[in-house]
Structure formats: C-alpha cells, structure tokens
Length: 70
Image 1: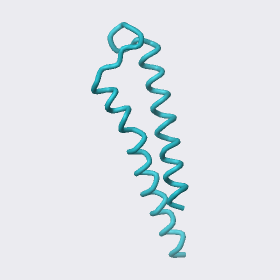
Image 2 (image 1 turned 135 degrees about the horizontal axis):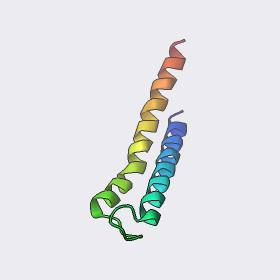
Image 3 (image 1 turned 180 degrees about the vertical axis):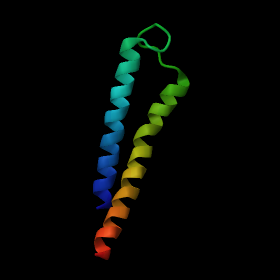
Image 4 (image 1 turned 180 degrees about the horizontal axis):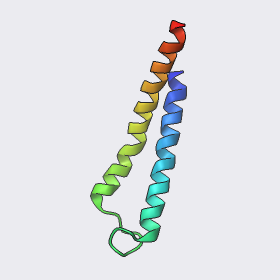
C-alpha cells in the first residue's frame, strides 16, 4: 500500500508541476518573456514531486491503518 501511495504522490506531483510550468513558461506570464523562470520558482518546482511523494506515502499509510482496524 505504501508503494502505491508513493507512486500516486509522484504522479500527482509530476502532473501539477508540468501543468503549472507549461502555463507559466509558455505564456510568459512572469516577466513578459517566454522561457524565463526565476530561481525561486524553479526551486519550488523541484520540491513538488518529493513533497507530493511523501504526502502520498503518509496518506497511504493512514488509509492502510484505518482499513486494518476494521
């Protein structure tokens, strides 16, 4: 169950990261020039996948614990 949560968290992080990055970079919404991404935002994108993976594992463990109690 924990591996499933890890995979689901990584997939969720990947999808959110791609959707936001494509919208910001392609549209040039940050500073008017397409393709430029500030360092702070790039670091945030780098943390999305590991963060969602950890959240996915924690949620999977909580769900597994609740299912085993019943």
